[in-house]
Length: 162
Image 1 (cartoon, rainbow, N blue to C red):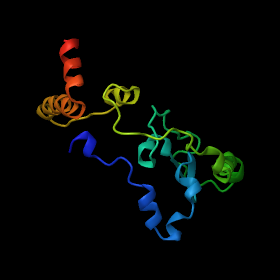
Image 2 (cartoon, rainbow, N blue to C red):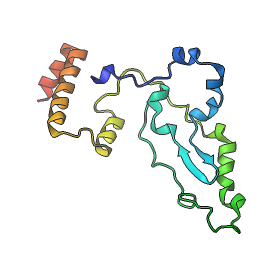
Image 3 (cartoon, rainbow, N blue to C red):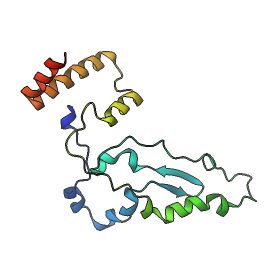
Image 4 (tube, rainbow, N blue to C red):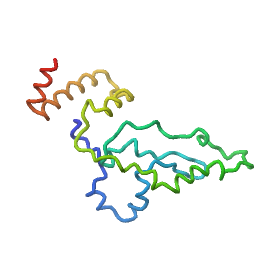
């Protein structure tokens, strides 16, 4: 697939309007950075790391949240532990999840520029290709795609910058 063929926003207004009401329960949580609590297991829901799925601009995300005092909690042999004290701040954040929404980001229009701050950061943080041959081919394809999508002015810009 080419970059412009990939659907970054699967949850469009049209798709949402077709869902039954039960699927929309809890929509306040969809875009909230909050702890998800299931008994003693706590993991962080971090939609700020996938904003494009919600139609928003993806900014460089902060480091993932996972406080060390709650990671790998085990109830085994901890009969005297004050769980209310230990988990109080996390439960409070969950209860106030509407205050932790990330829906204030502007709407994303079109594909991100290859040289946008986010894409530059993303390329530094991820392994883009498994096979080195694919990396060379993909880079050439991206340049060709840019020329095809943006026309003569982009081609001239490539020629002038060399």
